[in-house]
Length: 420
Ligand code: F0G
Image (cartoon, rainbow, N blue to C red; front, side):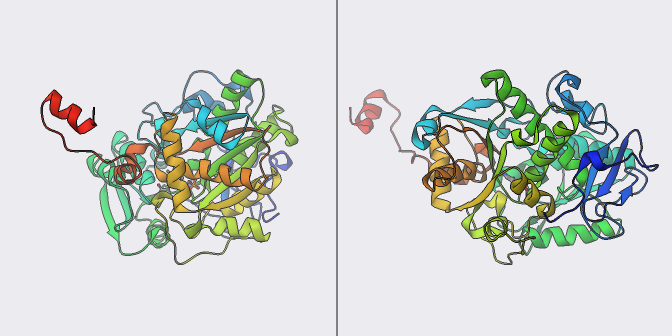
C-alpha cells in the first residue's frame, strides 16, 4: 500500500477538530484544523489530506434527496446548492446484451444541474470557501470543473477564475463558464500545466483552489457511491460487485473508496462487500493504468497526453495516492481504451437512450475490454459511471452521430430525399 494512514477506525478525535471534523494527512498521519487556515496539502510533509469525522454515518442517518440527503456524512448540514445529486441509475439492455453482463446499470452523472458530477463536489467545496471567507475561487480544468465552479461561484456571489488548456476544452463547457461569469484564461499548455500554475496562485494566497486536490470536493463526490449503493440495494437487494469509471485526476476513484471505508467504519458494509473499483483511461493518457498494471507504488507523470475524451486528457492524476490503494484494496483494476472504442461506446449508450460525452463512455468501453480479457465475469452486478452529459461536447456528439441531410420545404420533396 502506498499510503499508511487510510484506516479511519484507528484514529482518535484530535483537539484541532471543529464540530467533529478535521483533516488528516494520508502520508504522515498528522491531524490539522479544517477551517482555521487555508490548506490543501499537509504543511508538514506535502501529503494529500483527507476529511475525517468523530463519527461515521450509515444508511439510517440519511434523509431527504440529492447530495444533502447525505449531510450526516458531510462536514455541514447544507451547502451552496442548486439541487445536485439524485441522478438516475439506468438499465441499459443492449449494452447488457453486447457485454454479456447479466446485470448492468449506468449511473448517469450528466443529469446533474451543470451536466457533470462536479456539482456534487462544488456544493460542499464552495460552502467551505464561504466558511473560510475567501474572496476568489479558482481551478484548472479540462472543462467540467470550470463549468461547475463558475455556476456555484455565481450562486455564492464570489469571483471565479478558471485556467483551461487552450484549444482542448469542449465547447459546451467553455460556454457554461462564460455565461456564469467566470474569468476564463486559456493557457498555452495542457491540464497538468494549468494545475501547476493555479496551485502556485493558491499557495501565494491569490485564490482558493477548488480542484479535487481540495479534500472537501471529494467529500461531496462520495455521495455518488452512497446513491449507487442505495439505488442498487433498492432495485436488486444487493450492493454492486463492481463500479467502472473514467479516471482523470482519480478524484472519484478516491471518493468511492473513502465512502466504502466510512460505511465499514459505520458498520453498514463488510470489507469484502466493497465493490471492485475499476478505472478506465484513454490510451493516450493512462498513467494510472500504467501504475496499476506494473504494480508500482506511485504514478509517474506523462508529459505528453492526447485523447478525444478531452475531459480525461490528464498526465498526472493528483489523487493517485488515495486512488491506487482503493483500486487494489477492493480487488479492482484499471484498463486503457482507444479513442475509437470510446466513440463506439458513446454510440452504444446513445442507442439505449443515454447521452454522454466521450470521457463518460470510456467506462463502457473499458467494461467491453475487461469482458474480452475475461477479467469481469458475466454474473457480476456492474455499475458503469457516466460522468458528463452529451451536450458538454456537441462537436464530438455530432462527429459520432448521423449526418444531417439537406431537404426541401415540402412533404413530397422530403419523401423523395428519404427514398420513399
Ligand atoms: N469524466 C468527466 C466528464 C470529467 O470531466 C472528469 C474530470 C473525469 C471523468 C475524471 O474524473 O478527475 O475524478 O478522475 N474532469 C476534470 C475537469 C479534470 O477539469 O473537469 P476524476
